Image 1 (cartoon, rainbow, N blue to C red):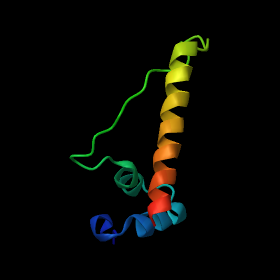
Image 2 (image 1 turned 180 degrees about the vertical axis):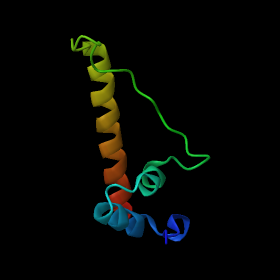
Image 3 (image 1 turned 90 degrees about the vertical axis):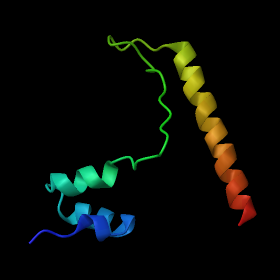
Image 4 (image 1 turned 30 degrees about the horizontal axis):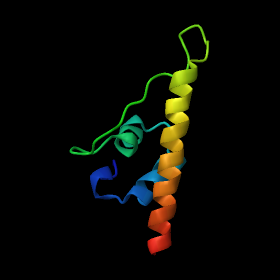
Length: 78
């Protein structure tokens, strides 16, 4: 009998996937993007040949720094 993944919390689903690593349905549900959630896409950091793209690396580094600052501000509130 299959578990009802939709009723599991994220933590429960993650624990289930760790125990049942071959359950593709559970893995897909764990990593799906919920409807209405906006996902920001970034450019590739290297070409198909593996050559780094400095401008794209700079964009990613800046995005990471901004996210860390945002997380730090949020944690300071609690």
